[in-house]
Length: 386
Ligand code: PLP
Image (cartoon, rainbow, N blue to C red; front, top):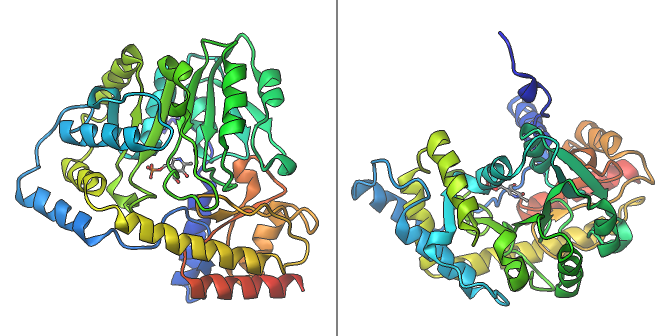
């Protein structure tokens, strides 16, 4: 059966592939520790689960409005307004809820990009941005950031990458896979460059905003001059351990753009699951203690993994400031692909090769696993290289 050229050219998600491989090995009785997937290992907090059950009992079982339930959109706007430094007055009408932040990003790219439009993506980057740009027949302009810059794009690199054809810049802070955070100074410098390019849309993926450790992430909504071309993306997956609920959203003040996204979503999806939307609303409007507790757990695991990784010969890494990944440069030993394979075969530890993120010198380890598993995985890894 024919498979369209558009689909043939997209790669399978390597983090999902590695996780599936770890799953197969486990099923075959091999004691594999998977550090490959990007999702909190905690259960969804009880009050959110109860809200989902109540939504079922209350009959949230019909189609709903395409951009999401009004009360959830309002809660999202309120949450975004409460973020420190936010300078834009968000309203419910600026929000479209989708099936995960992944779909919000997909919708934004499909809505913005014409064939051959250029999209600047600082690398390393989350696996899906490039594939989504390719699906829209856009052109990925990969900017390779440096270890010394903590893998943040510099204003000079951005200026060099910008052209007449640039239609979008995608930023992700805190970053997957590097854990880097753009501080205010770095963002200000980027915004200054963008002032000379008023047609460039900025997509700011802030899905890890609640998971930061030494410094607070700065939302791009702190920069008012961008407001007519800014798209903020966020969701409940990482902050509230709700990956399986599949609720994410985008916010933009550019209503013609938002309406176009809503038109696309109307043809593609109708609306995200109503029960999941009610659960997301409970997450945003209920007590935030659960989120803070999960953040604290990740903060402790970060300390642990960094301490243990510092003892592994041939690894160098920047301490992650956010998210739940360690991204060591292993090039002193071999390519990230070779090292990831070695770890799978010899240590039975699944990690994702950096090539999946456009940085073949590195590997990504997720520390969204228990303390005991982190200790055991790092012990096994150390044995491979000692
Ligand atoms: N953005 C980044 C950087 C991610 O790492 C992920 C998930 O791994 C997503 C977006 C998508 O999140 P979701 O679709 O679960 O909301």
